[in-house]
Image 1: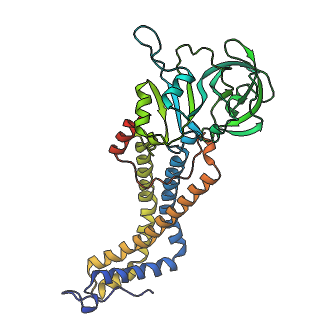
Image 2 (image 1 turned 90 degrees about the vertical axis):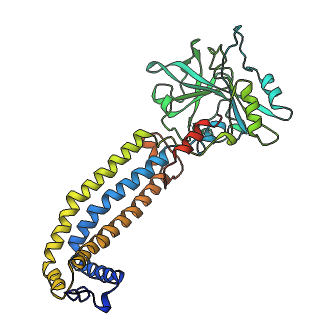
Image 3 (image 1 turned 45 degrees about the vertical axis):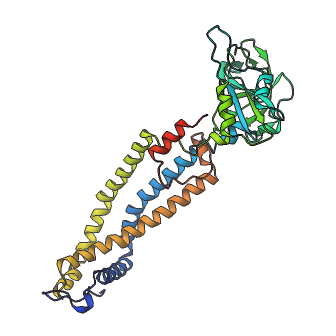
Length: 379
């Protein structure tokens, strides 16, 4: 039988047991020996306590990894360019567009030494094998070095002529298959699908990408017209404000705050429900297991009381059981959950829900002040 707690007198503690930390360490040693002696019961309790911790930790890491922050997704939006410029398409009171809509106008705003390429976006209808459908459309020369990192080429090649397009797997599933010639846009222009590309983060997106001037013919208001720009010097917030004053939307590293959108109210409530369910599972399943353990140790606890142990010290022995088994199980669940979360990021398990990103461990949630700061950041 394991050694009892330090001997107590009925009037107080002896000199060997005056220190509560020392008494608690002795109780921890008793609980450890009892846990090793009753391996089956200990394993059951550790599974009941550790499994909810593992699931919660894995779910949090998986959600944070699958969600892409603005900084993590910046390369997919601007490639290797210094900034991305998009017109807002707001008309003046006399009906003329106040936003610069030509490359020459944008070049004058950027100054000498800058280089820009068109990067327009919108949507396009197409008639494929399954009839008419719609997909996001981008006019972009993916052969240009400024677009590196925006898409991955999976099959085929990139468009090199006006009558050629590439599609994402999502658009291919809708009927614009590799090697076919779907009729695209309201003009029903036949365009050959010469390749399949994939967005680096949004793996289930349905997109069509062609050369500039081939897909978006219905943008009379200029909305969606944009450029990728390479500047001779770093872009500052002052430069960005100047472009915004010209009614242009600008995205650059200087405008990005590294915050995530997945921690909104609904997701916080969902995480809270997961935690509550885990606690209930521990209380309803692991609690009875601890009670059975205490019942099995009645004789040992009675010996502790008979040798002068106070009711507080008896409770300390039972508390030590929770610390040894519950604490060990929670730590093991934390390590295994983090390991599985890291493995899911390496294996890109986020493809199951269409979001792939770098490993992200949400150590602490962002404060409301940081979210307000992100919302106020110029885009």
